[in-house]
Amino acid sequence: MEMDDFTQLVQSVNGLLWGMYCLIPLLVGTGIYLTIKLRFIQIRRFGQAFRKVFGGITLFGDKAGKDGMSSFQSLATAISAQVGTGNLAGVATAIAMGGPGAIFWMWLAAFFGMATIFAEATLAQVFRARDAHGQIMGGPAFYISRGLHNKPLAAFFAVSIIIALGFIGNMVQANSIADGFHKAFEIPQWATGIFVFAIAGFIFIGGVRRIASFAEKMVPLMAVVYILGSLTIIFSNYDMILPAFKEIIVGAFDPSAATGGIIGASLKEAIRYGVARGLFSNEAGMGSTPHAHALAQVKHPCEQGLVAYVGLFFDTFIVLNMTALVILTTGVLDGKSTGIVLTQAAFTAGLGDIGPGFVAICLFFFAFTTIVGWYFFGEQNVKYLLGLRWVQSYRVLVLCFLMLGSFLHVTLVWELADFFNGIMVIPNVIALLALSGLVAKVLKDYDTKFMLGETPEYGALSPSGGEPFSLEPSPRKGRRFSRLKLRLRRKKTPPVNLDEMDQLKERGLDRF
Image (cartoon, rainbow, N blue to C red; front, top):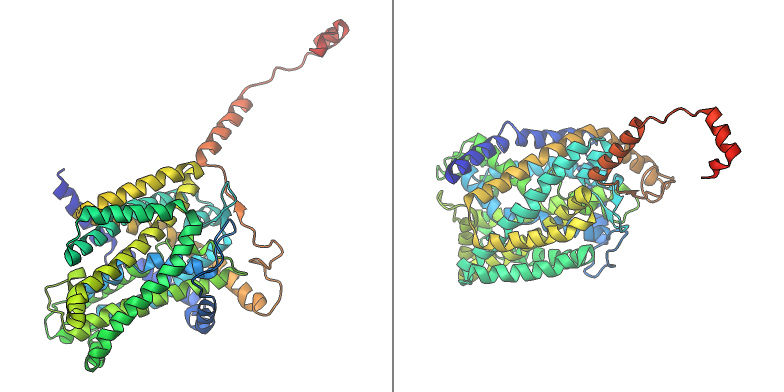
């Protein structure tokens, strides 16, 4: 099979995987189910969640250590992965392929996704562990193996996320940075690759402490810069704001009417591209962000669940909407341009000659913070699968993929990234649905005991103190130990001859 044929095969598989009959209904359906199961947690506790997040914002929090990181540092690390190229290129692709109405379906998917990400973060807190050095860690692999007692499924998830995010995903992010800087500033791709390689290596070597410190400073900074730049364009075209929202609402149900036929999208395409790109951006149900939320130092698991869905709200309803409104208010939608090209055209129309440079710089921050977040998520799963001794090798491999990604722009690489992102969803969603009853139980404990000042069953104030469990030995060691026990059982001990024992005692030989 030639490379082009293999690329087409992967594209076909992705079309089915991310289509209307697989992951889209699975993820949205899970969100709807959990929304009902948790009694619309995204509405009931919305105000409290925002107060907790904005009451804990700091650019110079306590350093992360063995006992994890602050709640805001965990949120910043999660957002660093959520807010990425999808917020720039992904939104533009959704609008270009599905029309402005795709944004409405993004909103709907994000609303239900808030319940999904609440469940993910809560379970990550309940089933977190300590590695051989006493460092707290956690994520879907831990609640799949400990909650579902299904180690093969947990291993499948761990392998998928290491490949999807740690290797191929980060390769794609590095390519986006190098390509963006080459087009905006004519900087050679190899130079950008070396720069990304050096900065990423410095942060990776610092471990969880440096990653948390980087995230808590960089995420608020990049968000403020991007939002201010976007609002400048949106308000300078204030007369187009209401028509833009009209295009979104009308286009959600009649895509061709919203754009006067410029975008020949059907309702099915509006839903497909809106939901798929929205889920790809906010990562609800994909099992990535729980790795960061597991490390948060909170008194009850549900506290971090609330914080987690604020992160999704920020990603979709604020940052993603900024890009959408800039594109729609500047009137650059022509039915031809798509992806980052459309986004750059919109910012050029709004900011003039500095537009492409502004997009390239924002793309760097968005993509680079995603690289750091995804590296960290992959590292947690390397620890789970292989132990601490393989972390250094994983680190070196990620840096190599980053450098390689700066040079290559291969369609197959992008398609493989979509494929592995898709298959890692499946074991995570199985766990979320199977453990939904436990999530509801933990939430009830939060509502009826923790919030009323009584002793809860879960978390730091519970009788157990919420202490993480010790990470189990690797499967290889476990199998070897099992084989040893089996061999010992098979060795039959000969029966004792009492007459011979008496004779040995008389001769004094029993001492030996």
